[in-house]
Amino acid sequence: MRDRRRFVTIVGGAALLLTLTFLLLVSIAVAAFHLSSLQVNEWRGEVIVGAIFVITLGAVVWGMLRKLQSHYSRREARAVTVTFAAVSPVLMGIGFVLGMTVGGFADVAFGTQSDVVAFACVVVGSAAVTALLMLLVSGLAMGITRLTIKSEERASISTI
Image 1 (tube, rainbow, N blue to C red):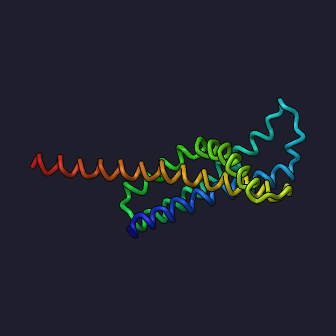
Image 2: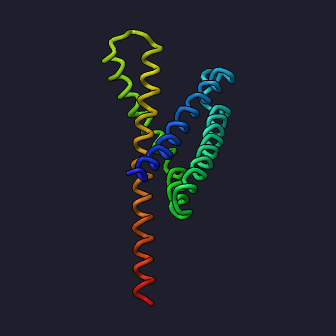
Image 3: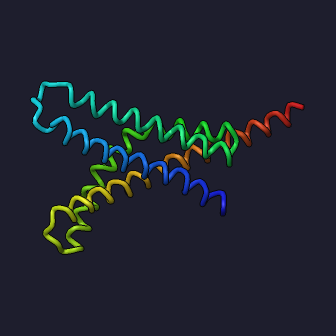
């Protein structure tokens, strides 16, 4: 039980950190570089957002790998980290779309007409949905890695 709790804490925390840091840095970049006023064919905004994502993802994945290596085998930690890094762009995109829906429902449930509350609901909804999706995929990667390790151990015992 503690093993699962530790895994959820490490991977879920990394997913939340990645999502919220990315949203914060993109918001700062939009305000600082006036990215919303760029022409459609200009590439500067895409490069800035891409660089922010790569730097944020690299820092979060590095920290997550260090934490996972202190509690799990090297192979398990690397498998989860590589899976997290590989699928996070897709899952963040899905999480942002679904998060807007979840945030919209939460805003209606709160019954306010404030744009700040609506934006906060969308950010929290996006972060929560993204973290859940990343937890599911990373947990699947951990399970497959553990099954692979067990089957390799059985195969090596049967050949002796």
